[in-house]
Length: 111
Length: 113
Image 1 (cartoon, rainbow over the protein chains, first blue to last red):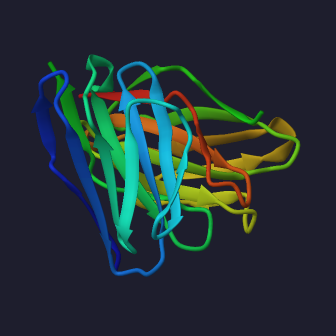
Image 2: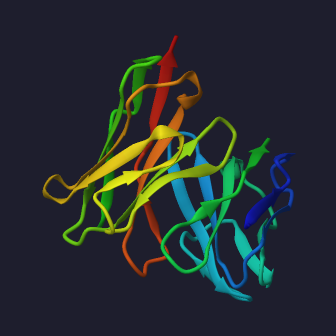
Image 3: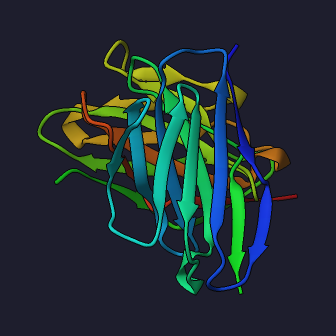
């Protein structure tokens, strides 16, 4: 069966520091991968998605970037965090069909 | 643009009572529809999905939803609430072939003993 992991589970970072969040999927091949942010009172916002290695689509211009170095690995990065980057980051995957399956999330607090 | 409306940001029921969470979508073409549940500090878990095969969809944990095209609705129900059902519920739409999901704002369900 397929499983999705996100690392780390929680993170507290100072403003201006770099960021790297990792998402990995097991038990499937060539998934579409997604990064979402869930900020308090603002619902879920799609940040990036990828349909293959090295292919990244950005939905919202911002302080973040994404990379997909391997088929089942999706990384969310920032060179300098802002206070507004705080939130709950969710990774999701799908293969065929329309259903996206979500990971456990990473709670990021920027101070 | 497609939108999803969840009526009621907070719903409170007694344990054992009927749970009804409302969702309406706006689209001339019926989309794929989903209900997800989110427990505190966790990711979203798929409860059920409508993909045009059947209008009454049964999901996990005793939940079901009925697709009504004439009302553009996809309300979520459970006959008898359990304390463990307390969570936030999201109604989500997807237009075939699109990578983007359209999320409702969520309904937080409280179950009182």
